[in-house]
Image 1 (cartoon, rainbow, N blue to C red):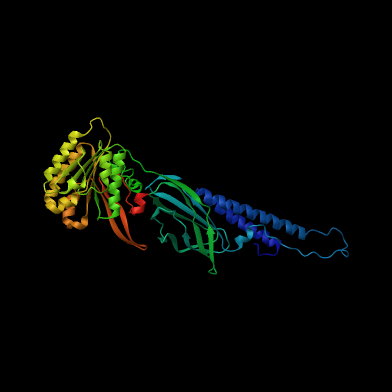
Image 2: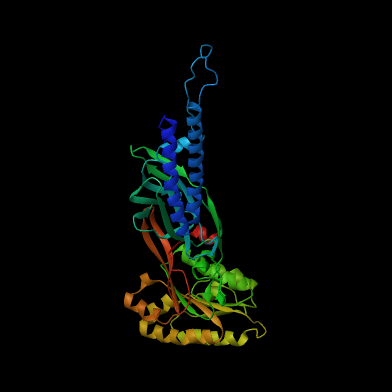
Amino acid sequence: AKRETDPEKEAKYFLMAEKVLGISLDSFGKAKHEEKAALVKRLLGKAKEERELAVSLSEVFHSPGVTSTTGGFTTISPTYEIAAGLERFEHADIQAKLVLPSKEVSAGEDLKLKIQVINVGKESVLLSKIENLLPASFQMVSVPDGFSFENLQLTALGKQLEPLKAEEITLTMRSLKSGEFEFRPKIECADETGQKLIFNIEPATCRISDAVLSGRLRTGYKDLDNLLMGGLPEEYGIILTSPSNDERGLLIKRFLETGIKNGETTFYITSEVGGVKDLAEEFQSNFYLFVCNPRADVMIKDLPNVYKIKGVDNLTDIDISLIKAFRNLDRSRTGPKRACVEVVSDVLLQHRAVITRKWLSGLLPDLKSRGFTTLAIVNPQMHPTEEVYAILGLFDGEIRISEKDTPEGLKKVLQIRKLYNQRYVESELNVTRQKIES
């Protein structure tokens, strides 16, 4: 309509545009697309204003002269103006809006994000990609047909948007970190000439809260606790399968320190004292250390809460030390209890699968009956696969740390492999020493 120089014809074109927009407004209203209906309503108002302007210009140019003599006046040539902002609709142009059905979800829960796009121009556009889509710590769970997600951008596979047509893109994502996050994506398109067009979308924010279910024991690593929906289920026996690495050692340390410093009764069965010597000296009332090493006497001094065992050759010695510790527990201390059994690989190497399984079959129920939540550790690279599987079935859950090839290189990932009859997040978690220590 704006290309027409005849005001009468221009008014007719705008009248046609009003009718088309009116039909679109009615359709969006019946489909309950409130945002799209509001957008079309604004366009309808613009078209009406332009039509009324064209009609008024037509009346002016066809009105009779004020005087019968024109000798004293020069002829005025008509000029046409375009209302501010409307020239953008002459070519390819889109408008987009972010819609978050839920403004707040728990860490690890799915979040729906809708991107509503409408072509308000007169030419068709080809949707190319959407960048800056995910805030840091978010993971994409699913994208609609016709789109692919790679390298943190959403690519549209041949999506063409005709004039006055709309597209709604629904994405599912999740974050394992809590906090307030802002979505600020930008859309890249191409017009009919192949020219690249970039459109910024008004940002939207959402809040991710910590996921905490009742009856959970915090591990000390927040991201892992979010995967576990608050922590390890109380009185469960969980096994951590992981090669020997810094991340595994830090998880064990965090698990122990969290329990000890919260005043929980904490057992630690290990062959190495490592960095827990100071904890054993400082927290003698609730931290019990079982050192299974022939050199235990030179590794740590005698303390009432330290039990020295000559290795793992005789498993009965470990059982006897545990019974002594049970008897020495402060009966007035209530609340959760936790135990970390780091000698599973040592026992499996020494006694093979049958004896190890028999020992664990007695140890795990005994700890559970006394209110302990147990985290056991095994290095699967030290044993035949069938021996590892022989003991995995004894535990209520499994957490695994493994290495994975990614476009950025080899990374360590953590995943909950199973958690019997409990809710948890199945996503993989990238783990580094820095993340666990932070």
